[in-house]
Image (cartoon, rainbow, N blue to C red):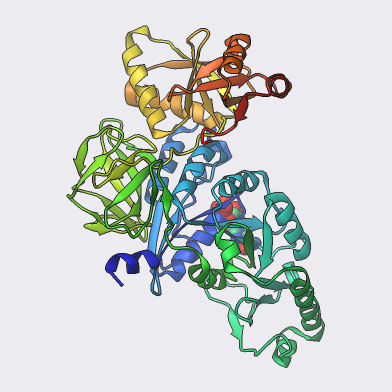
Amino acid sequence: MSDLTDEIQRRRTFAIISHPDAGKTTLTEKLLLFGGAIHIAGAVKSNKIKKTATSDWMEIEKQRGISVATSVMGFNYGDYKINILDTPGHQDFAEDTYRTLTAVDSVIIVVDVAKGVEQQTRKLMEVCRMRSTPVIIFVNKLDREGRDPFDILDELEAELKISVRPLSWPINIGQHFKGVYNIYEHSLDLFTPDKQKVSERVEIDNVDDPRIDQAVGEADAAKLREDLELIEGVYPDFDRESYLQGKVAPVFFGSALNTFGVKELLDCFVEIAPSPRPVDAIERRINPDEPNFSGFVFKIHANMDPNHRSCIAFVKICSGKFERNAVYRNVRTGKTLKFSAPTAFMAQRKSIVDEAWPGDIVGIPDTGNFKIGDTVTAGEEIHFRGLPSFSPEMFKYIENTDPMKSKQLEKGVQQLMDEGVAQLFTNQFNGRKIIGTVGQLQFEVIQYRLLHEYGAQVRWEPISLYKACWIESDDAEALAQFRRRKHQFMATDREGRDVFLADSNYVLQMAQSDFPKIRFHFTSEF
Ligand code: G4P
């Protein structure tokens, strides 16, 4: 096997997603502990922006700093090279998370056993489903009182709209939690609450082994056998192929805080999770083992220092070997570029690398050459499909309050949109600019950054909108008629596509039923 194939096969690039507080940061930290990337618990800072910080700018800036450092965490685990892509904890930055999900090959979802599936998880799962991303579910906090595990499985299936298959099973929960039976490996791990140490493993032959009774007591052993029988009866055997196709999600139970069930998760993960997969460009499918380098920019992180307006562009490598100082091409602009200081992210450090492989993320210092979604290649004219934009949930008119600075404002807005901070629409009727975001905090960040990085002052004006949807039709006349009828509510996105701004759910539904020939899309990728 060539170096390239070897390197591809040992890579696992994934993201951990959850509703805030389910335990994503804690689980990430424990995975890093196993990988030897950190040595003590508590070393990973949460990049959560606490609720109280909504108007505390220093705090936000600080958080942004932390999130650069922990954006990508790479480490070796056995023969595997693992890349964890971090996603912002705050839901106002969900758009960032959506985009990060385009750069991973699989996902681990963390669910709190007491709270079950929460709103943010449901939304992120939709993104995974759109792309058939394989997901593994970790049900966390078994050391606390929570729901019955069978109820949790039912809820996962119903709420996340995916079949599930438990690969481990808890023995009691909360105060009486005794451990988990590992269905995947047929082993038993006993729970000892300890934030640093790994659990105790009991050697057993199979589920009927009397050593289980000795370890957890006869009553709990009997209950375990009953549960396992039920599981085998209800859920089909685990099929890796269905998992890889995103059709079934294996489920693990544990407690991240107590480092319990985490190693089992990791060991199974490296075995079953996919290595970098082929990626579709508009022109053709790109296989990771093609010799020529290709990749795309999925995230741009602005520098914290307003005096140096440089950014880091995060490039996910899709094929070939990436080499420092090689000549690469930004397909959108046609410019060729040499990257003399690409960084890789090992453990929690950034360091300059000479080479990187498919599945890896390299950070490229940039002064405005890149836009989110750009394709970079060794020369070939291919375009990876645009990263999806989702209909924003909040909208405001952006108004210039300092006419002397309109150039700066224009530039600032353009660059922030290139970074993917929010979405810009231009109303076709009155030419006013509308910014769409996922949360209130983004408006505050934009206003702050425009002032501090570009010297432009803006104010927001309210606009009452329910959703923005991209519209298209095969029938030009129907489209023209729709645009005439809705001319006050038609806007253009940055790519020049038609967007309908519906001011209520009712209006949207009416529009859908009045114009059956028009297709309404809630993401820009269709
Ligand atoms: P997040 O990144 O998904 O938002 O969650 P995070 O890991 O920060 O965990 C949220 C809270 O849940 C933390 O408590 C964390 O200690 C706790 N937690 C995580 N895993 C477990 C678990 O297995 N069992 C129990 N009982 N708790 C768990 P906190 O009080 O908010 O923060 P901290 O002061 O402990 O850092």
